[in-house]
Length: 123
Length: 107
Image (cartoon, rainbow over all chains, first blue to last red; front, side):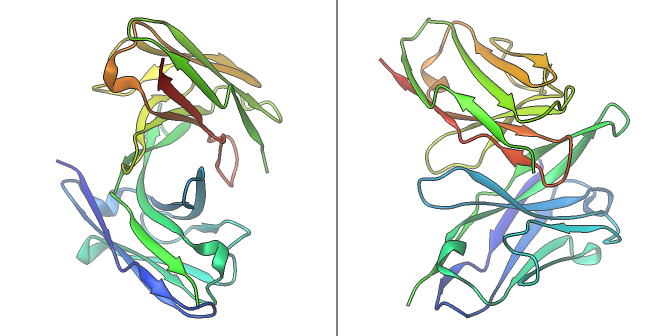
């Protein structure tokens, strides 16, 4: 059974830092690219960042570029998000989500999601 | 970035009804469109990928159609467990973007 379990959320002051983790199990983690997606309280879904299976390709949303860093450790089956210079508007539930390629990679979707970890940025 | 707009933002329906949710992209995205279901306090769940392909394990009462800029998610014979919020998402270009969501409520 595929499982993604996020941790590391909590309350942090504006300007502070936090490191989120996502522990993966039930599949060959090193074969899949991964993402972070967030959801502000009562709001919709916002993609945050992507990392390829080998970490060779990384993308960020403009809203977090230069402040957040995505990484992974395939030996530990883990995905990370280092968040620096946090702002009020970063308050959200952060989900890790697996990328699934369809039709020989022509299409992709987010097929498995963790339960999320809440990050609250407030003084 | 490609903007995704869903309509309606909310709708009420009864068990057994058939409902349709629309998603419009700000530019053509071919069939690079996914649909997700999210229940309160839970993670999103993939329903449909590539506009019309049903994710494994998803009931056949869910169907998707469309291409280019206009897409629909249809739920036939609504069941009590279908009352949730639905999101479309384009995978045509980076960044992937989501619609604002459609909340399906029990009438």
